[in-house]
Image 1: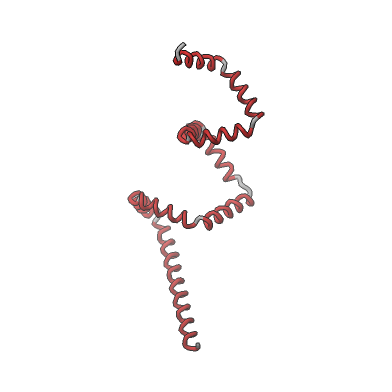
Image 2: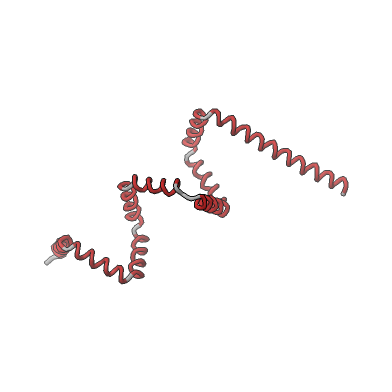
Amino acid sequence: MDRETKNKKAREYYHKNKDKHLARVKVWQKSNPDKTKSYTLKWRSKNPDKVRGYNINHYNKNKDKILMSARKRYHNASPEQVANRKQKSREYYTLNREKILAYGKKYYQNNKERCLKLSKQWRLNNPDKIVIYTKRQNLKRIDARIQKLQVKRKNLIEELNG
């Protein structure tokens, strides 16, 4: 018997006895969790495209359920969970600040036209917010200038008195 017919017969046998085979596999996996985990990790590292494709298909099939449960988790969070989420976000930002800023700059460089277009569109849609934000920015700039002048004044006084 040649190889092709052997493979064909093996596939037919597998499809006929698929349930039995899967049941045996589940029993083996439960009795050997360490081997199962190492095999799975090895396979996933060798086949990232297949894993990504499976995840995308799963997400597309179950998108409504996934988004609904995510909304529930986010909106039904207790005050402690919200505080914990904010704290973790702050910690991550402080630990990875340079990386985050570099990513933002790189994204802007790669998508400059899109970013400018979105910014322009937002400005056209929110003229009232632009007024508020420009006032805030101007106040921050003025405060920064005042602080610099105060430091210079203090240094000059110290030099004169020094």
